[in-house]
Length: 466
Ligand SMILES: [Zn+2]
Image (cartoon, rainbow, N blue to C red):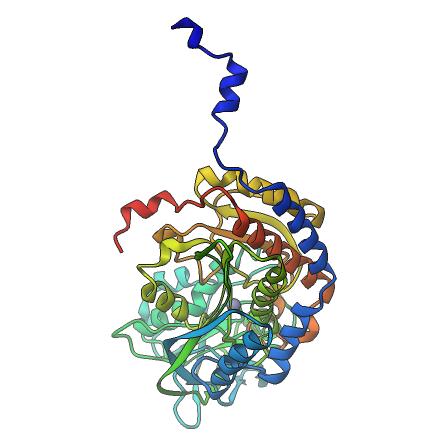
């Protein structure tokens, strides 16, 4: 029996995986694709087309319907093999005019915008004394007597960071502040804009009334006005503010996830899902959020097409991300039995700047493939990060169903200067950075599509019953 024992070196070579991860040819193709993408204007042309020909596209509005029509027509123009849409019921809310001013002790106007889904103020506006908080947690802890009949103001600050780190903390006041304030008897909520700029552009964004709580109007003032208001507070006198929000809520409407595919040559039923969200807030033109993501996903697939991907490249333009991942949840539920066919998913939804890191959340057996991808990304100055990626807002709900995801992390240093403001416009996009960004997406999607080794579901999938 002893003669059957093999030298260790030979054993190691026998235990190598049966499948190559990606062939030498695929890696050469990926490098060529990367160089083509770095010279392509397509991504910029797409985001220009969406922002110029459609503009703002708040879910449920006629502009949202025009965006859906734009996406279908654009997929067709680009020669996608399969184009279809999935209905999604969305909220239909419109902003109307918004104004606010300090009545006393030092009268002057404030730049304000309504938060998404806020009720209107009564005709003639609402006037009250301001009571100040640094955070929702501080508001939660306060005796209701101090808030009753007053306007709650939350001054949660955030600073610039490449990864947008403080957003999730600062955003709590925006999303649930009105309900917490209302439960304590407040008549309205004003927040400091969730943003990193020094400007008079207020930032809107989604909020949600908790069931059973009286709906009170909610708005955000610009960061410049927030600073002034805090300085006025130091004068030690009670501050009275009047606000007037003319919002309207309509019946829900049908919008759509719009999907385009480049059909795989070898494994047409296996999908590499790349995505952005088609809706935007209404004051800017949604160039960064998320016209850029729409353009990145569409351009990536179009650039890959001539290289004949083995797996299908599926581009999903999600409906109503801003309303709380509404299109994504519909996508997940409507495709519950098919999710195992999605071999990798990612969404671009953090602007249009250059990528600096590649993160994944894949099965450990596929980490060797990810390392191959990282090598092709290296010349783009992209580091290989960890295996804890979320994948982007709309696809972040898929790993719980076993779907592997990736994140190409882009420089978001100034993203929250413009996010959800009238200033989210095309001129903020640097075409050169956008090209680097798309080149990275093309490399990831293409090498994964070509893998000769099977792409495995996340193991947590075993615990999830569809
Ligand atoms: Zn977004």
